[in-house]
Image (cartoon, rainbow, N blue to C red; front, side, top):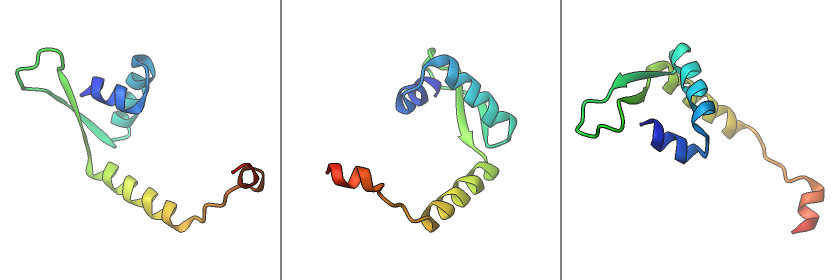
Length: 77
C-alpha cells in the first residue's frame, strides 16, 4: 500500500511515486489492484523473483564488507 510505504520510508508522495515507477519498470516489484474493502487504496506492490534476487545479492555483498568507524567519529563517543 503506497501510503504505508510512504510513511515507513519517510518519503513524500512525489519521490515515492517515481521510485515505485522505476522499480516496476525494472521488474523488481509488481503493481496489483487491491481488492479489499478499503476504498482509500487501489494498489499494492509485491516483490518479484528478480527483486528478491537483487535483495539477496545486496545482503550478501553487505555482509562481505567490513564497516569501519571513522577515527574522528570514534573520538567523539
